[in-house]
Image (tube, rainbow, N blue to C red; front, top):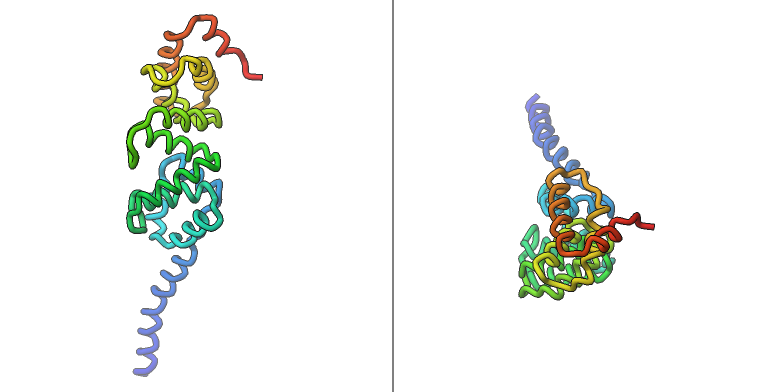
Length: 206
């Protein structure tokens, strides 16, 4: 009888441990589309923390060995902000640059934004505009808005005004605040261009 009770108590202790183990094993690595969705909502780092930092090695392998741009973006941020790994800004920045070099719109926008505001690097408006223009051309709305704001403030080339207006004129968003920001930015851009150029920028994209 005593042996039976001991076995029963041991079983009760084992079940929660087994359940936790099963729960830990259930964490799956993010698909490319899932990760991009997390990046676009700026929730990628929170997701890594929510998953108890279990996927660090897998993330690192996909960033360093497989060189997947979305994972380079993610691991670069993890290193720069010390999320689940020791802080290493230099390596993190290098991964961000690699992500941008592979043409990931979010990576291009991030590098352009950081050059603009001087995060991790010295401010460099010229470099910021190069990266933001590339991201904007790939449809990244954040880059389109930031580039337009730089042009309005007198940075960059007036040659870019028409294209910048065109991108924002045809931008689509369900966010009311962002929609209003686009509207205000378009009005400021229009004030700096001849009416004929504004009309041309509004023509349907073929």
